[in-house]
Structures are given as C-alpha cells and as structure tokens.
Length: 435
Image (cartoon, rainbow, N blue to C red; front, side, top):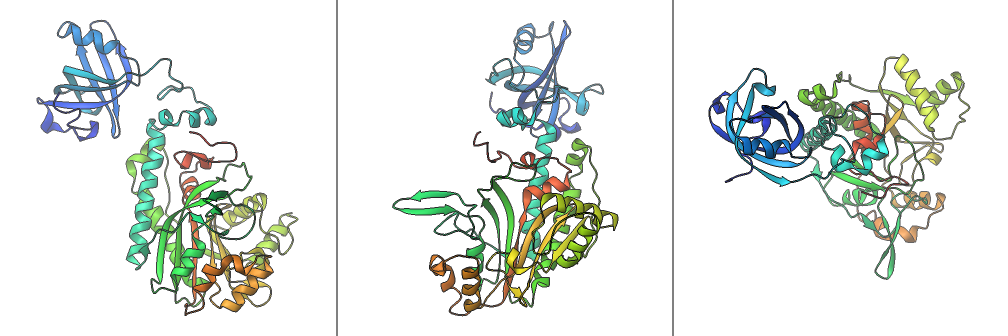
C-alpha cells in the first residue's frame, strides 16, 4: 500500500464517492452475518464503515472477520455512497493491512455499555483515551488553552517558560517535592511565582506561562492533583489588584466562549453551556465569613476557607445568581509572603471561585524590598534562602500583580466533571505514579 491513510473518516465527501481511498484506524466492532460483514473503523475524527462481501472477496472477508477488536488496520477500497451506513458512505475493501493486532481479552472496553471504575480506566489510560467522550474532553482542553494564548497575546502579554527545578520553595511551607540536584538539594516548583516577579524587573512587564505546579499536598479528593497545570500571569504598572482581576475575568470569559464553539465535542458529551456575564461579583472576605456563619458554618475570622465552606458559599452565591465570584481582601496572615498588605490586617488579594470550587488565586505583590523581607521573616522563612529572588527588587521594579488559574479545575467546572483526574491525561495524586 502506498499510504496508510488518504482520508480521515469525517473528511470523506461526495467528491470521493466512486473513487478509491485509503482509511486507517482501530477496529471498533465487527458484525459478521454470514454472507456480508460490517467492520466499524475508528480514527481520531470519528468512525466509518467497511463493508465486505464474502462471495466477492472471500479471502479478504475471512481475514477481516478474524481480526480482534481494537487492532489497528489500514484499508484501501472503493468509497461508495450508502444511506444505511454511518456518514452516508461505506468502503468496499480491495486490500488491507494489519498494522498492529490487539491481544484478547481487552483490559477495558471502548464502546461497551458497562462502565468501568475510574482506577481501572486510569490504569489503562491508553485505551480509555480511545473513547469519543474522553477525547472530547481533551479537544475542548486544547481549545481553551488556545483561547488563553490568543487573549493574553491580544493584551500584549509575552509567553515565557521558567524553571521547574529551583533552589528554594516557591511559596514557603512544606508542601514541596525535594530532589537531589548533583551535590545540592533542590525542589520542584510549586508555581512560577518567584520567576514571574523577577521578570517584572526586566521591562517584560506582561508575561504569562502555561505552567506546571508540583505540590506535595497529601489530599486525596476529587479536586486535588499533585501535578497540575495552570495559566500563570504577571503584569506590572498596576494601580491595585483590580487591574489583575479584570484580566482574569476576561480571560475566563474568552476561554468559556471558545469552549462553547466546540459544538461537535459538546454533542458527544451531551452537554450545553451558558456564557457567564461580566463583571464577576466581588465579595470581601469579611462578608464571606458573615454569609457562612449565617448558614451555620463555624469558620472564624482569619481562617482560610475549607472545602465544605467553599461548597456552602457556592450554594449561597448560586442562590444570589452568581456562578463565578471573587473573594477579596483576605487577611494578610492567610496569604503567601509576597502578597501586598492593605493596612495591618488585610491584603490586596483575591480568589476566583466557580460554584464552590477555587479556580484561581492572585494578588497585587509587594515591590518594596524591605516590606518583602519583613513578610518573609513573618512567615518564618529566611531571606537568605531567597537571595537571587530578592536581588531583582533592589534595582528598580514597578508595582505588579498576577494570578495562577488552574486549567484542570476550570475544565472540571466547564464540563461538570466530577473528578479532576479526568481532566489531565495521566494524573498524579498521592497514590498514583503510573502510568
């Protein structure tokens, strides 16, 4: 065969009827009814039907019906119009080649009606990803990330790539993965935070990164991963955190809008979405505590919101007509050392939540080195461990701020997926290190 594929399943048009084409993919199903057999072939864009007559091509017939499901084949044949076949056409094979035979039995069904446990699916992720509905998730993911690039570049942001192996914790605390770096101790970055801020001293005053987060948190919940991705943004010459929040809410809107244009994928998932309205509601932390206490929560002022409090707040805000909302003006003691204080008690920070799930966290940052060193010490950290970071604040750095926006959590809320592990190709959590 000259080529394994000339057309994907959904690329075939009326112009191809009566012509010889070549298709390739996985054998999804075989229906042998004696004198005729129908092979359903699946590729990245859909499925098609190969129809083989026993009387016309007995040798091809016998070999095709003997192929195991999920084997990979290439078929060259006549493309023929058929109102009974899927897509309105069928392929009458003239020759074919088995490119890879699948072992039996399959560890996981692709089109079987019986649903498998999530762990079984993740253990066999390479097969799980053959399902149309699972592929749809990642096609939508591609679309929303493309939208993030488009929107941020339209606002003069420059894409950067910062190190994932660093000499000190990105955000302080103990939730870090340590590793040996030749003769030194190093860490996997919790976020690009320190490098983003250093870049604000360079003149590249608007940067973003599709970043990896590595966090050694011992959570094992439906919304936590130990390795995740985010749209991470930093911008300079801001007046306050409101400038950053406006970029974030417009980014979310544009990503949501781009996702809504994935009609085919939403059809596969049997889902519909409605565009959120801008601007998103701003709710100061103090009001959040009052709202929660009014509904029976025991949370006290100064505490960060736990999962149950976030869920309760989501219900409260939903009743008030808001899916998306910012929590603003957190207590400074609840935020990382680089967060700009406002007065003695508060901070110029925010979290973006959607229906009770935190999607993003951000703030105006401290750009005064003395205040920054004071906050590092107040968080029981040693400024000496941040010397290369602090150096960037000594020679002129403008007021700046930014955020980290979780891609998997956004996708989970966008598609109403119950477990975040379904929103990343090969999830890493406290118990899963393979595949």
